[in-house]
Length: 256
Image (tube, rainbow, N blue to C red):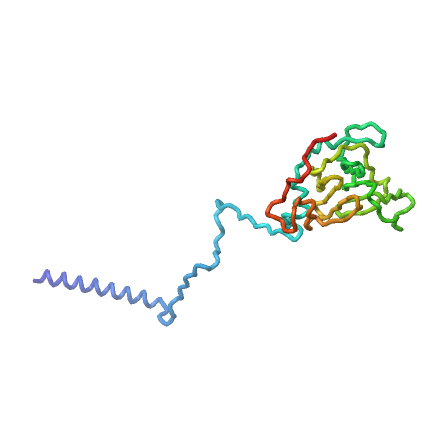
């Protein structure tokens, strides 16, 4: 029995030591301080960690401006650019005079079917399309043009500022004997695009969305986004169908 009593006292002494140690540890803590608040972020909380370098970079979405809006299906721009295009290389030939020999040249040059209109671009380094036509009456010589200007009323100049009727002929050489742009064909070069419709010629400049048409009635400025005339669309009634009627369109026949 004496051995049992010794073991019991040892157990009691050990338990007392544990209690004393726990009490000592608690005394270090501030028992009057409130417990710390644990905040669990919601699902929409912003992340503060940097993304891993293995993540692909985010691609920004580009918003179209007013000048980049999609053109109407029946606009001058759509009709001209939807027409059958000719090879640009065929229109790099011309002569410097009406009776001169034709040769390969830089820039692009063409005439309408009855040759009452001839056009050139790239002949003087200026980014402009210049045409000369017997049906272009033109404006009078503006006061700002000095004596060095050889003003011609039958010129049309189209550039990034839009169309202008009348110009200094010595600033814009237009070649002769250029190849014919047949009716129903279109020619695109740089920011310019032109379409021949019988003897009429429609041209637009993309950066300005401006252009012109020269017909037997003369010169007229146009907006590339405006609706093209019914005669150019090939519609047979006032109410157009979903697609143009091309049954009456001129055949595309390559000519020299």
